[in-house]
Image 1 (tube, chains in turn brown, yellow):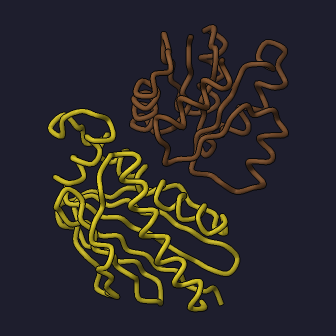
Image 2: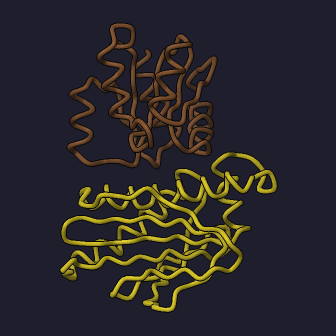
Length: 122
Length: 158
């Protein structure tokens, strides 16, 4: 299982990794990206199994990343989970319409991450 | 701003602060009953600042920490020793704390605000004050028996 964490804060990426490890959800390799653009590059050169992304990021935000992934035949079914402080209904609704697989609100517990990932990945 | 809204902002700011520290760093925040109306500001070493605004209300929130406590909080979030926390991790981690407190507050009150990206200021004993017309509300909290301050103003736009 290769899991890509997309967040413009390197510290938050480490905190998310720690949360996933604590939750017991098994990940073989963590990959990281600082924004949507970097995430696309990582996805193009790795066989990523699931993406965990923030929404508000410079260069390319999480919604734009999701939109790009859903319009490419290679990534249209790649599971994407948003992990964010953003809670505006309009943004969450747009993400759902684009085919978002899961949503985790910051602050989060390891259990919230673990159960969301397990539900999606089985 | 009506009293009901003001009360909701005060109450939920306290709840959000406690919740973020507890969930992300496993730290119990105390001292929520200490609320000061302070125009002169407070001093800190590391400060996260974020804007919360909509068409009617212009708000700002700042959370300022002494460096030692800031490092302990970020160390708890990363599960490493405080002495191993870099300057970058300290700024990044406390910026995220500020972002999550503001975001959690916004969620609790129905996502009425648009949040700015947080910024972080560092410098020993710098003065933190929020330059709006209204006097900022200053919460004095305690984490790991050390004080830190949260300042907030919510001002109606004319």
